[in-house]
Image (cartoon, rainbow, N blue to C red; front, side, top):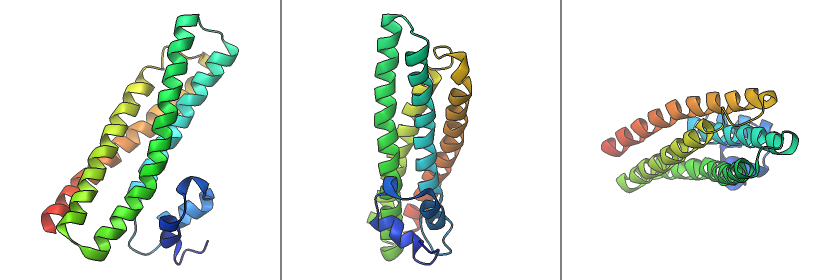
Length: 173
């Protein structure tokens, strides 16, 4: 994908199926498009993937007790759902941002606010899930948990800024 029109291709594609290079081209495109929203959503999906890896390795190689294994398995399933929701949010954010740019209507600005609130709730849920892992996974995957936590922390800051920005746009629309 070329940089010209990359943001439009992001709108038309399933973000999960795009090559990383294509997503990067869309985010850095020199046209008005969702940048931080897409980046934050995909970073949150990566946080979930890192946390899921830590659980998977722990379950496969370190055989926790049955109760803890069941609890970790349930947490892994929760993280999988959150991972899919984060990827879906990337496309939704791009579509909503474009709709707002096209119309500048208060209704579209409110959709941005609602989406930002929804994403912030997802970020909070992910933080709770990642927080449960530090003492429960094998030491060999501690770096994956730290990566998940660091990515989550960055996304939490970005999502707060995006919500603030969306509220400001709603008030200006």
